[in-house]
Every structure is written in C-alpha cells, then in structure tokens.
Image 1: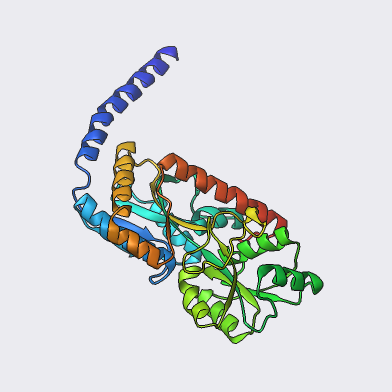
Image 2: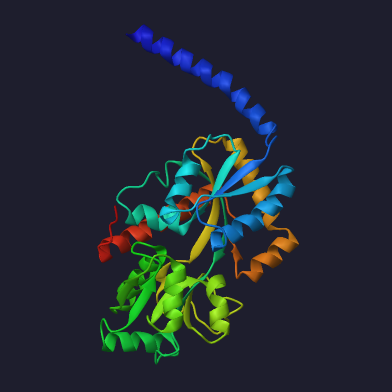
Amino acid sequence: MALRRTLLSTLAACAAAAFAPLALAQADDYPNRPVKLIVPFAPGGSTDMVARLLADKLSSVLGKAVVVDNKGGAGGSIGADAIAKAAPDGYTIGMATVSTHGANPALYAKLPYDAVKDFAPITNVMSVPSVFVVHPGVPARTMREFVALAKAQPGKYTFASPGTGSLGHANIENFMHLAGIELLHIPYKGAGQAMTDALAGQVNAMTDNLPSTLPNIQSGKLRPLAVLALKRSPVLPDVPTYAELGYPGMGDGGWFGLVAPAGTPREIVARLNAAAHKAMAMPDYVEKQKSISGESMANTPEQFARQIQAAIERYTAVAKRAHIRLD
C-alpha cells in the first residue's frame, strides 16, 4: 500500500511538472484567437453597456477581438452558469455583478453555479450608482421626510421592484430594516414594467440604476432621494448617499467586474488583469465611463474576490431578515 501511494504521488508530480511548461507556453501565446465575453443580461442594460465599453478597449490592448455574447435570463444565472462551465483557457470570460455574485447566491436556494468556487476573479471594473426615487406626488422632498412619512403610516407607501428576489427588492428590504420602516412591496416582471408604473404614480417608490433612471429625474417625472454609491454622483450633486444619511449598511452600490472559469491559469488571469487596467485608463474610456455615472473599481483578483464574498455575506443577512428564499 505504501509503495502504491509513493507511485501515485510520483506520477502526480510528474504530470504536474509536465503540465507546467504547457500552461506557461499557453500563457505566453495568449491570446491567439478572439476572446468571448459573456454578459449574463440582455443587451441595452447597465451590465451590457459596461461590457461593450470595456470590450472595445480590451480588444486593442490584447490585439485580438473581445466579442460580447449576451446570455440573459433567470436574473443572470443562465449567463453566470455559462461562464462557470466554459473551458478554463482564457478564451471565455464574463461579467460578474452584485446580482450574479452577491444577491443571487444569498436569495436562491438552488443555483447552477457556485459564485465563489466556480470562478477566478480577474478585476472589478466599474461601479454604477443606483438611485432611490419617488413619484412627485409623494409629499417628501428628502429621504428624511420620506422615512418620517413611512414611520407615521406603516405599510401605506409602496415600492416597485423588477421581481421578488431581485437586487432592487433586496436593496429596499435592507433599507427598510436599517431605517425601521415598512413599505409594501409590489413585484413586477422586469425593471421596465416597474418603471412604467412608478412614472404613472401607481407605485410610490423604486430603486434602479442611475443611468437608466436619470432621464426621468431630469425631466421631473421622478424625484431622487438617495444614491447607493461610495460618493455622490456628479450628475446628481445635491442627492446624498445612503451612508451620508446614516445608513452605511446599504453597502457601496452596484459593481461590474470580470471573472474567468475556475482553473484558468494564474498567468492568464494576471495578463487579463493588466490588460483590463490598461484599457480602463484610456482617456476615451474614462470619458464614456463618466457619461454613464460610472466610477473605476480596478483592483487585484484577490481584492475582487473579497468584494464578492462581502456582497454574498451582506445579502445573506438581508435574505434571512426578510425571509426571502427562492427556488
């Protein structure tokens, strides 16, 4: 038995030694063909906007096309699963968001992927604020006034979300807990339907990404009360962050990062990290990032891994408090 263990150990060591030069050679030659960038949401949304902006610049840095492939559905789970199950060779990478790698693992009892074990984080890319808005018919011009109204009449005021278990739902559940208020949740089948009824005054409030909400704020159709971000948005300089209002437990807002399938060689992950950071420093990239209210979140794979874990822990606590568990 001891001889067998020794033989197996020797064979394993030989196999690893034989594979190491091959992995390094693959990394040296990487990339020698186009790279697929899976976006786990439909075209036109915030994740897609960030991905296409990055892919354009990343293509020029890598010298090979980075092709966006939208695989939406199931709150991002279908696309995230496709990333996880791709060959770990650097030729399929994907976008990870607070939804796919924070809220979904906390809210869903069954996911086809493990947000931690099935991925190799590359870098976070960008944060885009979300904004809490109310219909102008709500008699509150600040978040403090809105909280006072909600406390005075628990359950009277409603909020829309893209669906039960969505990020918008989880964020407002978290805010209700932190502020000590009770709002009535009205779930919809998608952000578009939720926004339509918020604009019509059928619901009192909602939270959504700032880029998609900004036109309705600028036109006066919706009133912003707070932004979920590390700092105030330049396009809404008079609107405070949740942290400024005394709710740091809301977190740092939504982010969009790059991940690869678990098992992708570290040399390739490092090359992609460096290439992405170079792309994100290009002047026209920076200008376009500002145009969608984005902030750079470039970091190391290890730092991004910690951000993913922190998001999972935060939304797990929210899910437990609000008794949200989806099949």
